[in-house]
Length: 435
Ligand SMILES: Cc1cc2nc3c(=O)[nH]c(=O)nc-3n(C[C@H](O)[C@H](O)[C@H](O)COP(=O)(O)OP(=O)(O)OC[C@H]3O[C@@H](n4cnc5c(N)ncnc54)[C@H](O)[C@@H]3O)c2cc1C
Image 1 (cartoon, rainbow, N blue to C red):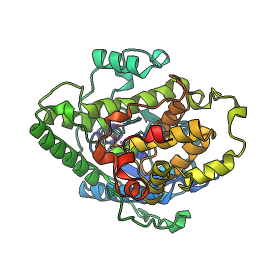
Image 2: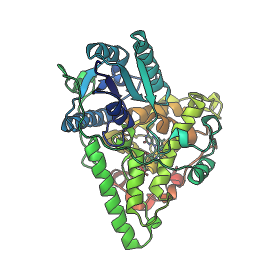
Image 3: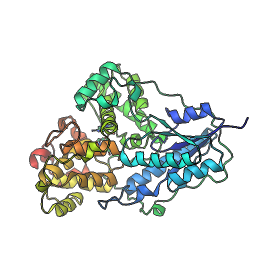
Image 4: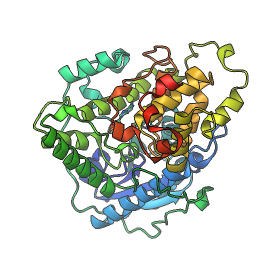
């Protein structure tokens, strides 16, 4: 009997731990062919003129793929790297390596699912199956206490029901030895220049240096847990303090799984319940993904609650000032300079600048969302477009002029050298009032 080979198509799941497609392929096949495609589509400009991927995120992605290759090599395997359209590359590799089936994780946003569909069609022409797995959320779709079509549109109800009626599955085992076929041309990592980008300059004022890869992700999780529990132990109360984890860039490309974070956080807290502030934040991520699953593109293409005629007549000029940090409102300008110089701003800063663009400047929110898509190092379609739609009062749980609970953000995280440059210290705490 001939050997069975499964191609594992890595996308936003750049890790070895808790990775169902990898472990399942190893169980079902004699050989596995791990592949990552740099799809030039993601390095073009969107219809609004912004790059789909800015250079901070691109560098982070390259580091993550390099780390995946290193980790696979440590398990005896090799990662095949190609630049091109996966709907052309994957069938070619399947023929070359006599692949029997292709595994991947299902996505939810429009562009990602349409790429999967193109790959599925191309594989079907050579009589191969693309098998879909669910692996990006904290709660597995099959374990939700409601069918997708009945998922509550209100986050509060969603959270309450899930916490009451669902459980998070345990992590999947990390594989041991991995067997790949003899690979003649594994392919090199591209350079940023090859994809039309320049090397980003690291700004010394950045509060965190993000280095892509599963190795760094696990290190960051350990760092967060040990620092948080050290301070919590001092304070004697776990919920009294919540310093954010800075894990989002790694979560977005799947260098770490939400389940891994969940179980490690619970293991390290005295409190064995799922009400840790970090776990509630992870639920927001699930919520936006499930909203996309339920509503599809409608979730963000619903008509603005403001009539289009409510947009400022000079919105192009206002938008340019906003993105360049030249609005004249010091806090907004400081945050936009931070975003442009580092690729990362905290949740409070995102809410504040997004709310300002939508509610004060009266600019079409989709321009802001496309700009964040280019700039954010942790860009994730459902989280970015979902949060923007939410702030714009669109989407499934709409309320006009919404700001979240900004009081939660600690002073420590709000103040940084960008804000110090632009804003006197006594103004930092009341940004919304200064708008
Ligand atoms: C306009 C706007 C755009 C955003 N775009 C993105 C994006 O493209 N990618 C992204 O990961 N997050 C996005 N967020 C959510 C949030 O700002 C970031 O996840 C958070 O700042 C990341 O920092 P952290 O890892 O320290 O978060 P923590 O507070 O430590 O939270 C842990 C994790 O929970 C998830 N999370 C927390 N808050 C949210 C939220 N409101 N929505 C969805 N997930 C959440 C993230 O995965 C985060 O890493 C956006 C928020 C706004 C208001």
